Structures are given as structure tokens and as C-alpha cells.
Image (tube, rainbow, N blue to C red):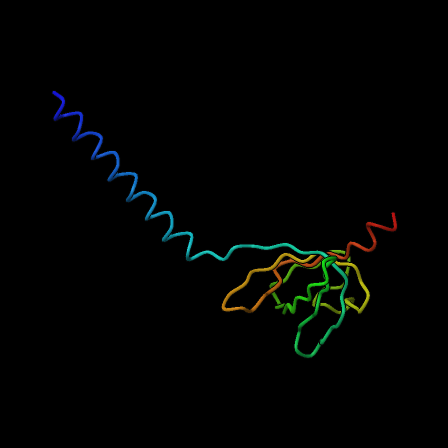
Length: 111
């Protein structure tokens, strides 16, 4: 009977291993979403990039695309200007940050 218990434990361990391996394979294919907030230091509308300086002094260069969602500013970054306080959700792939959402939070502070 104890041999049967050992088989069951081994089978459960193996099943867990394969479940974790499958989950990691799926997770690797998905981009993690990051969020920062700070002030816009520079905007290049032609290149569709912005530099955001966070409270700790770190500067993040982030690009935007036609799929980027905008809140509190005009679509496509038209209302984005230097000095604006914003919150940015972005993904990062191969060191390149791409905004998935940008929110002008300077207007929230003024309320």
C-alpha cells in the first residue's frame, strides 16, 4: 500500500511541474504592463516619443502608437506638452518602452 502512495505523490509532483512549466511558457509570450507617473521632460511628436521624469529622477523614454489610449489629453499625443504631469502604462520589449495608456493627471491634481 505504501508503494501506491509513493506513486501518487510522484504523479502529483510531476503534474505540478508540468503545470508550472506550461504557465511559464504562456507568461513569457505576454508582455508585462508597467506604470509610472511623472512630468513630461521632452516630447517629439514626429517620432512619437516622450521622456518622462519620475519623482526619483529617473528618465524614461517611451514611444506611443495608434493603439495607445489617451485620457485627459487629445488623442495621438497632440495635447501632450513639456511640464505635463502624466501617468503612463507601458510594455517593454528588448529595452523599448511602448505606451498602452497615457493619462494627464495634472488636471486631477487641480481639482
